[in-house]
Image (cartoon, rainbow, N blue to C red; front, side, top):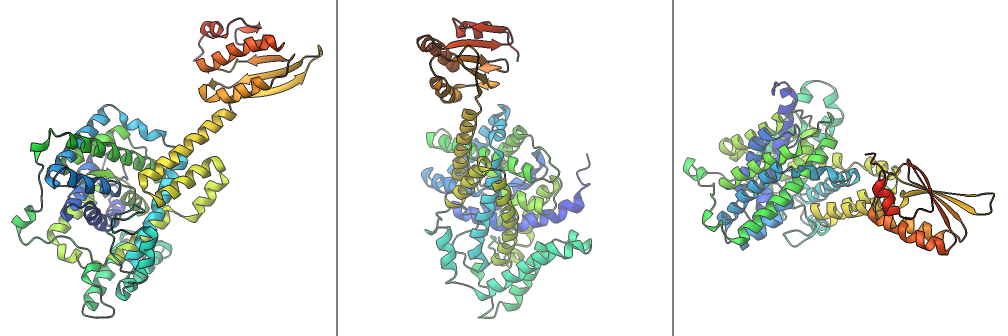
Length: 528
């Protein structure tokens, strides 16, 4: 397999992912209460190491917003960042164990409606969170995707506050950048090959840097330094190496370290598996990611990240969706984005620090819109309430709480929908009159009947009138839960008192008023 055959697609996509990842790596580190450089380390390891080991062709890994709150609390509880790094390393080892035990299968048990709701909810969150940055109001760091923010505001109050602190220069260049992106996406990319190779975000960022340089001395249209990217600038090689931190393994036997490690492993694995499902759905080539291999890759990445001072890593939907939207075709786009992060923080940190955050906000606004297109709501609505309800609850939950809580709420609603469907589909009932005067009721049980169906079957049996005739057809039934057999046993006693005759119809023949359902179903031949 030639990993460079899609380079013409992967290289432009990697540049877009780099510009999306850069502020998120820094912002998530800030939101986590960790050193800024730790976010860049996680981004670099997530791109190069996890990208190389992963079985996902279009997934991108790095520091995750969903872990920021856990990191923030854990650093304080464990007595410092070096102690916390021990938990990151152990969390990676636990993830390796998850992969070996084939726990990746969990990712396949999330309903499609919840996954689509997750993508849409994240898209809406990206849009809402980028509005303040678009106007040059940066009190809340990039990557804080929770409704209740670390700066004391919430998503909507932050937007309202930003209207009182609009920076004319930041807003102007953000609007110009957004215009470039829309023009590129809707018009220019269809005109010539060059516009496909040189991505719109790269042009928007270049224009943003030029604008900053030309207006930095202007009091009206200039952009304040606190509205720019803020990459740490080392003075020499020793100061650069001094930005790396190393685990304090003296605390490895402390219970809190292991509790934190397991929490990181569990949350990071769950976020990764959800992201894998989501990116596979977005992937136009419909590749299927091996989930257990992904857990092994993520575990390896977290071990290495923790060993050199990086934040915990997961596969992340914002960068992955940006990769897909930009035309990434193979894992090379993720790997190259990691190398771009590494090279740029070493060679051009001062140039990076000339990028207006508002321009990057315009890039993320486009990413968010493509994830949360209004047409998707209409499509889900047309599919019926059983799809639309879990989808909507997931979206609302993510917007008003956080990613995992929103998915949890959507999953709960999805399970309730399944139970309702199971209740409705447990049996088929047909009523007819027969010549002997007894009312005949034909009840055909479903292929699989479990304790979920108890209520529906009990309801129908209790409704049977006295003196009726029940024909119970189990020819299609391949699994009958013991709870249902007990219901039938109990009903056979009631049937005698209510003058109800029962005929059991199976592939073995017909039995009138069977003495024992338990004995019958134990003796029937297995068909599956």
